[in-house]
Amino acid sequence: MTTLPTLTAALLEQRRIATEVLGLVELEAAALGNGGSLPSETAAAKQRLLPRLASAARNLRQQRELWQHLSPEERGSMLGALDDLRCTQELLMKVILRDRENEQRLLRAGAVPARHFSKVQPQASAHFVANLYRKNAG
Image (cartoon, rainbow, N blue to C red):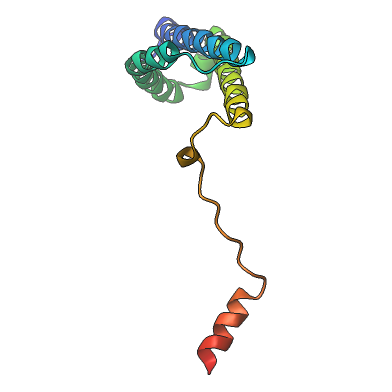
């Protein structure tokens, strides 16, 4: 059964990791803002965080499953967990937004290799299906 301390601990670990990632993303933003490129140490630090992030996500998922089996009364008694969850979500959104800004800077600077762009599909003509029928009818 989930308890407030275990859920809070899982959210706290998630928040610690997100804070570390936010710090790395802000370092990248500062470097890109000065006209530089991405620091190589931030990519390595992000890679080192991946196992911790995966573990924290698994733990949080387990806590969520236990939370869903609680009665509404039990959930209502754990309002602190909802505040912790909201705070964690806000921090994660900051990370995502800041990282997107960094991606946009890289794209504008032309610093992203062409192989990282998705392939653009040619648009089909308005009468594509009709032309297929016409071609196969005769």
